[in-house]
Length: 254
Image (cartoon, rainbow, N blue to C red; front, side, top):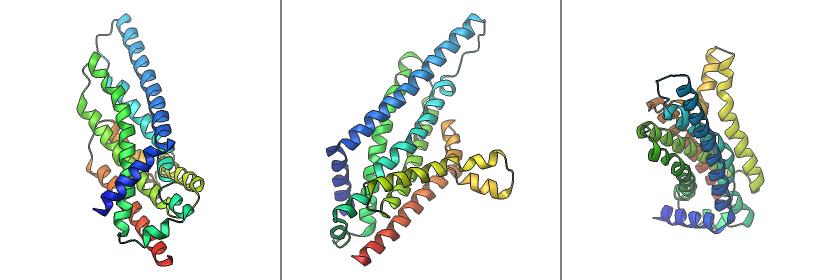
């Protein structure tokens, strides 16, 4: 019950400030641009194929939906740190963190309430992009199942980065520092699999396995793999666990 109260408070605080509207507007603008480019390319390639006498139709899932979902996952690297940077850093800056950690609310209720509010905001942003992709069903017949798998991957990837960003927000009272650090860690987790491009050692494969990009690729193709789901759930658990330990130290100091 306490977690729900904190969740509502955080969600309302998002939409009472220009942060949520600014982030959602920028997200919708960028994803809409990527969607337009993908559709324009798809139409152009279709016309060229018809002029060349090729009867094999192009796959709208592979040519439009998959690239758009991959681009959305990249945009999340920039958007998610902006969503998590204030979760605890603002509480520490204003001095309300002491009241929060000494109140009759458990650490996990605080963490889950704040993390779920950020996750709902991110899901709302994904919903805006889904409106664009849904227009494809008005003029064609794309397969909706790979699309839903792709959005599940985006939600899991976003949840894991949000959990990590929540932990980072507990480590500083400066929102800018929390945002920059969150983006740096997210970017690092994104490019880890680049190491496997020119190294084939066991260590390189282990490092590449930790990359959020490597585990999203199967989701973007519409493939549901248990190891990728387990990776993201583990990342969420680790991020929230570290947040709990950090919040516990704040409680003892308070």
